[in-house]
Length: 295
Image 1 (cartoon, rainbow, N blue to C red):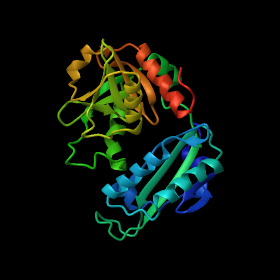
Image 2: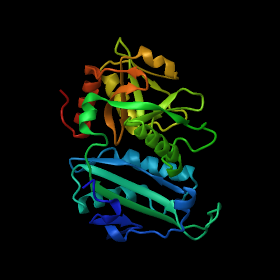
Image 3: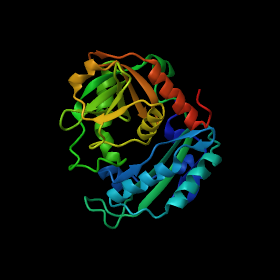
């Protein structure tokens, strides 16, 4: 299925309150979302036929829209119902859901005061974000030449489309050098996150250290992993982390809705072990999302 382009797939997409044919869920090339990034979205996982943390994702979708000054023509209850409707129509058991909100074509300039707001929700079967083999061995990251911008320069705590431009640039840069993903630093040259996932480091004494999310998204999965770790009496320290501190850590992993819990074996010149603590957190997370009893 992954080899089929996304505009050539079949089924239905929830589009402005209606179920439309997948290949007919189209927009005009002159729309504000495309040209000026007046667009917010979410990425949600379906496990065993249920959208994990749907309410939290929907809350964040509406928060992102408010931060962007976009008025959503539906309420939270309607979006949740539409999300559940589309996974049932598409018969998605284990997959991905993408709600997206954007400004339309009424005005084509910086200002978009009169532009209509559009909403769509798509869902499809989907497996692992990273190669499953690499999720066992650990992925390799470079250090991006791009930086997360200062928090007073962008709506940093949202899933706004424009924020992902430097993620794509960083990801492409990493892949061109033989890496799987890229570590991004913040505007103060401290460690921030990967291109689409938060990051944790493990110390020799089994503490977890993770950057303070003050210029990048505080991920829903990130918060779940912190909760799981604390339930296991694992100390979690949120702080500023300098890149040259990485030689003090023995383990590293990424977290995210797509990435789930993904071990990291290398960042630039620094190497890490895929240790039992990280494997245990991953197993507990899988048990949580699939509502199974953790071992």
